[in-house]
Image 1: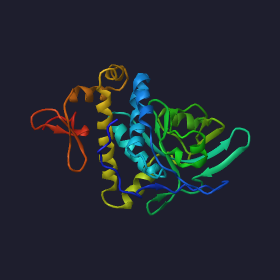
Image 2: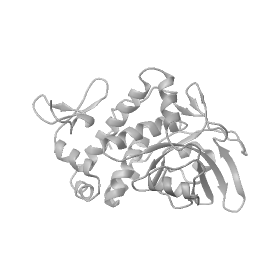
Image 3: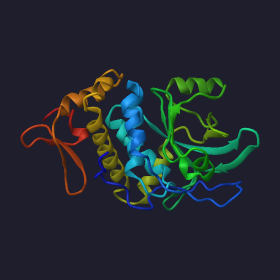
Image 4: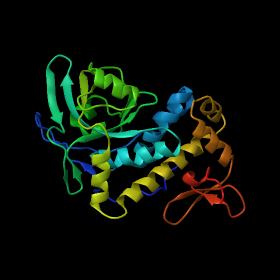
Length: 292
């Protein structure tokens, strides 16, 4: 797997401050990472829709190897822009996470209480909700020691249980939104990860990111675009592109048409461009733009 040369947010930006409220030990966030063998296995065997939706978070984790794992807001904002670039709606979603044991009950609660920012720290945990497919992406779940010890992998899968029974929740879900109070439970070997939505959109995240300092939101956007470019590099390879073309993502298909086998140019800032013609270097967000 090639190393990413894309821009990364500067250290310490937009971290999770979702400290445990009940725990048997001290909180240590650990480090991010994704073995390239797992990415290769996914690329070799995943069905079309998974091939598109699973690659961006897996690449982000691979490129972020060694970074402290309590950067859930950075992950969500970067991946939001990567998904947006390829035409997949992905909503950054603040949540509370309760890690429980199948037989012993709740172990630790992370991110409880009112939402707030303390400098670059956000009080809640943050995930991505993909309403088009019903997938839930928690790229930094391994920051929590109990999860890391049980199964050191991200959560990337469809929501299975439990949406919540109110009429308002069902109507919101039909519109691609999750209301506060909606739950999703994810089994992890002997653990149950119980997520509760604590805000129905990512405005509190976006506002906080802009408040951190000038350029931070733009840095996340550019990093997301570079991540999308890296994904396109893999999706256009023989043996992979045929399955990607079978996925129901028209913008991905159009981007693949636009780049063909065009070489990639990486500038001094680490931003990715496709050389689609003489003097025609374009970023991912420029590939489908109509010339003026």
